[in-house]
Length: 295
Ligand code: PMP
Image 1 (cartoon, rainbow, N blue to C red):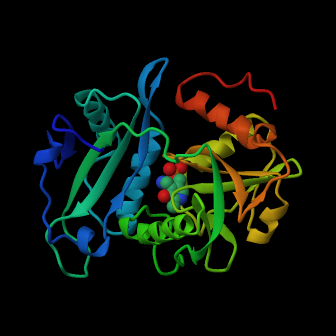
Image 2: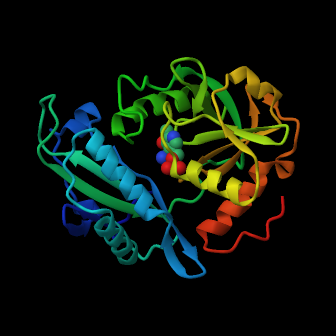
């Protein structure tokens, strides 16, 4: 699914066949989740293949490394160039890129002195199998920002995400929505969250969530299209009165939410800001103008 016998990935300064790439089994990333990664999308645009917000993603990767004391020497520009080369070598245009910074052999509980980096790319269509999601409020909360570095996209944080999504599916839902350690709505396991009520969009503020690059793009779109948006804390109960809601993330893009705990919204998706933003987002990632979208 992720590679074939022809696929190539970037590993520590070289492009190698994915099936020949080897990793040491005694690394902290494998044993303790001590590593960081990114999820990036490239699109076939009217101006050729474009990696969406490559600089921002590699900036976050480097910040994640700094927060975990992982010594990554590549610059954002170098990583962007390598990513374009990787797409070309794999003949990919619409693709998902997965850079991973991981540790070599080291069973101690101190940060490694050296790290490895790999970047893989594959064709990954829609992240969710449904266009509109039935979401539950998870029994799992997001990690306490005082026990980890919430702004870092660290591998180990995704134990929490996998548990939440698995629980949601076991309960018959498509996806989970998690609260923070104080019971305020935080985010999905792999996406940020927005809801609409009485002509205003709301999203949790930074602090207890991953600072999503798509979330920032949504805020920019709102600014451009004069859609009122507020960053504030809110509890799950408020969502039962909402007019609409959506998840946003690089993999998820803008995905409509159909219901929360079985309760649907007062507006149909097409009549919400979410639908307008979804269209604008697709236009931006494909380098098309979106100024014609009238709210
Ligand atoms: N929150 C979490 C927990 C995520 O894993 C992601 C996906 N990276 C997001 C939010 C959205 O971030 P972005 O828009 O940068 O992909």
